[in-house]
Image (tube, rainbow, N blue to C red; front, side, top):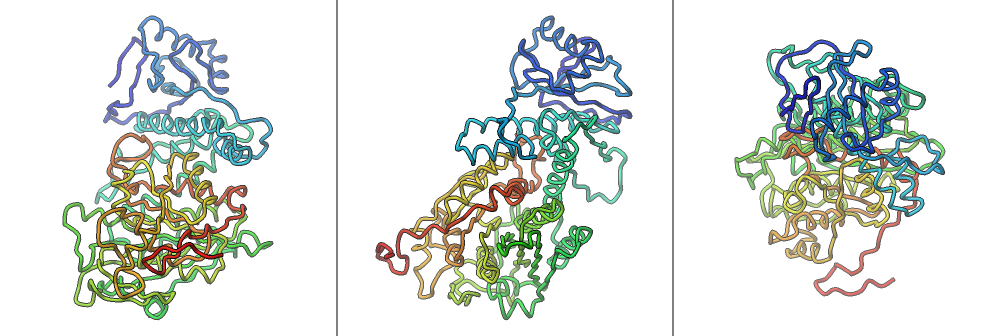
Length: 558
């Protein structure tokens, strides 16, 4: 709604966007504690207020005093229409939280969110965690400003003390999926830029735009119908995304169905029920030739999941076009590292299949001898993601990785446990889990550490084979899935289950559209792999506390 006070409009978060299209441009400025007496202008707002002889502050104060505007910090924006400044049609002012700059002792050329991140990790002082909150607030307010003004030709943004977060929020908010047969001028998006980019702001702004564009790429791929994005189509998209950045440091390798049949039995058996042929995509990036340390990122690429013979119920089955969201995130994170020229050796592994029922499909009760030699009984063909990931995790051993991170829409149980606010994080390395969790907090893509208990794995040892692909009961579904995967790794490893967070269900985050795939946790993982203070740490696999080879738990001998 909007409350009109003569020349001023106060917009709240449930504003209905005007359907008409406006020409002209909008200037978005930030003010800390907008409706309070201790309000503080950002450097750009202060400069423009001075050029306008105090008109901005006077307008805000008049509204606050004469019209008893709420002092609630969540009041989002004020629009000043009659103030003439350059060629702008209006000035849109957003309310910002108080801002505390990072310690002067931190000299790394990062935005405030990463300065705070580095400080937290180095000093163990989580007081700076408040700056993560500020960065997320800036993202959300920038996104609201874009939504409110998307009918204008251009929007010019105040850096708001955190240009990277402003760019992220504005770029993410501009994302749109359009599969209509006819284009419409009303669907055009405004041109978004930073106003009067200052020293050091250009690099941070451009980095924020690139990171957000990579998350938008993950969202776009996840939203495409499976008949428009089969495994071969995904490979083509990967080439198109990375080819302009190939300066000799990239290596593509696409394995065909025959190779997959002989080398990755889990991938082959999941794919054989569909006429759509599988692919196994490997992309290597050599960003640091001074070391052999290699990091691996893996994404689950089920382009459509019907459940196979264990057919899913029809309600909302169309959402299973997004069962390759993990692959979309992995590719986007890898692409960001390449485009940012991160000094790291990174390998991206993506198994691509379609899980369909047919006379050739794998059946409940069938056994697969996996890549690492384990015999697995398939009790449920709808638990196919862990089969293709298990083979891929085993295959990753050839790179002698320093660490491996996999992303997958593995279980619906993660949605029951955490909803869409958090992605479930499982790891066999405490240090890796801690640092990924901090990266999630720094980017607003929260990761919640979950346990891999020995009881979960014991529940998968009830048949005559080495493992079952599911347990008999429904309890701890996401933990049981992670426990299954843990049997195929021999290195520091993290598994991120985005089964609940792959789609934004509510309107609580302005830069993510409800009922659409959201591309999380792309930004969290980009921050992890692009920050040398994180990726270069020594990670040690945490030993299992018990022997899991028998039903009787015995302490593991050293």
